[in-house]
Length: 114
Image (cartoon, rainbow, N blue to C red; front, side, top):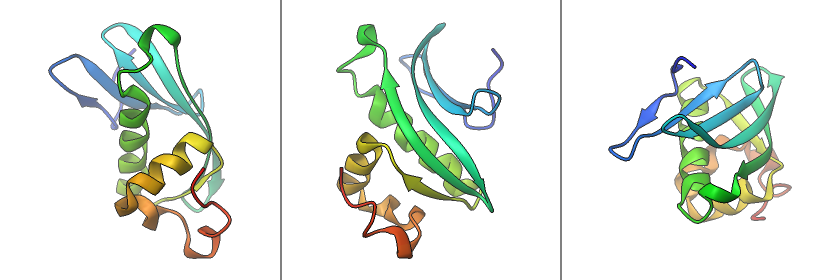
């Protein structure tokens, strides 16, 4: 699969990228799909972040957090906003307040930490 504009790669061969056809951001470890963050495009650059999942063989490596960070960086670069329905994303946002600005101010109370 060709890398998209979201590509982030480290020396341990981890790549995160948007897969718009599947409506998800994905994180790859080499040739293996390690996990994904499913989303819905709501229009006007808004994304509903619905579900984060990392496969059992890839658990406990910090990949879910790296995936969320890469997805939020990409959405920010697009000038977008997020509605974090996924509890993992809400928890990640609570630990990384620099990204809280991606949640529209009038929705922040509704999407408090997960």
